[in-house]
Every structure is written in structure tokens, then in C-alpha cells.
Length: 114
Length: 113
Image (tube, rainbow over all chains, first blue to last red; front, side, top):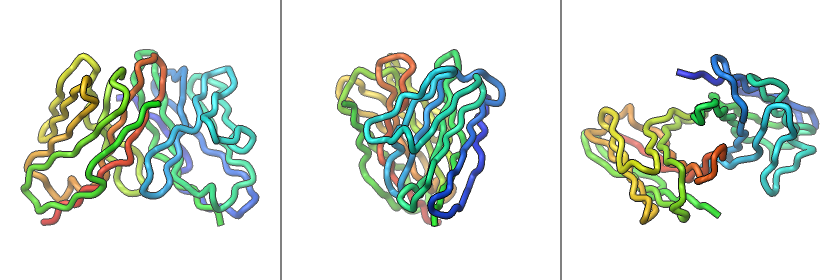
């Protein structure tokens, strides 16, 4: 089956630093990628929709200047958390959509900001 | 705005029991509904996907039903095992093409041996 690789799986960083998370579709072209965030005991909440070659569409309440999304190719999307703060600590997970409309998820990234 | 609710939030059962997890959604105009399993700190494992035109799907000990008109889905787990312990997420895909999934908060299941 289709595979979505997400790295890193876990990252610990100091407050004020930036963290980049990569999401790669390994055996299919992903025209659209979705980025979700999950706080403890909460649902996965959609942060943004990323389309290859165009600007990402952010959900209400998500700061686009803080969460930079780049979808430069059909197999790679990156999420950069800029100037991270402890309240950004969360589980981030990406999902990629293939041409047949199926969705596949990465394994997630646990971000801890000290 | 589509909202997905899962009941109960947590469930503890002894091994061998049959159980039902419930999911409800507010807008019946969905493209499909999917059940996932999430282990602590891990990604999602897709269990069953039901298209809007389907009534149910089965995989092994799992059976998921969909009643689109009433906005409900159930996940039935037969003969539960300790290895089934995880959080089960229900997610709907709205009717528009290319849209993201909308998730419920999940039901955390604990099966004791």
C-alpha cells in the first residue's frame, strides 16, 4: 500500500527555535497534503491544506506566519514551526491525498518545546 | 459546520467481550466515513472505510456500519483482546472533493486479560 514518511518522529527543542517537519509520499504523487495537530486527549484538528506549487490554505485560528508550509514538489511537504513556544508542544501529523482521492497518513511528530 | 462526536470517551472491558463504539456527525452530506486506530504517541492505522453509498464494512473481528440519514456510525469489535487496547477515531470526509477528514475525539479502549 501507499506509504507516507514523516520525520522526525520526535523532537525536543528550546523555546524560540524553529523546527521543520517533513512529510513525503514514497510511492505516489500527492497533489494535496493536509497538516493536523493533536493536543493530549483531543481530536486531530486540521491546521492547513497544502497544494503542490501554491500557497497553503490555513484554517481559522492558525497563524500562517508561525506555521510555514512548503509543498514544493508532488512528493514533499514541510511544516516549519517558527519561534516555537511551549504551547506549540503537540502531536503533528500529515496526510497525503493521491490522484485516486485516497488519503494516507504519516506516523506523526511529537514536538516538545522546553 | 460538520462536527463529529464519539461516545463513550473511554471504555474498559474484560477480554472476550463484544463491544460497540459510537460515532455521530451533524451533516449527513458526507463523501465517506473512516475508522482509525491510534496507539499512544503513534500515527493512525486505517481500520475500515465506508463510502457514502455503503451501509457497512467488515474486516476480521471488526464491523462498521453507516446510517447516513441519521448521522451515525458504529464500530463493532467482536471477542475483544488486550491487543485491541488503543484509541479509536471516527472521521468523516465532507461531501466536497479534495477535502480533509474531520475527526472525533476518539474512544479510548482498554481490554484487560
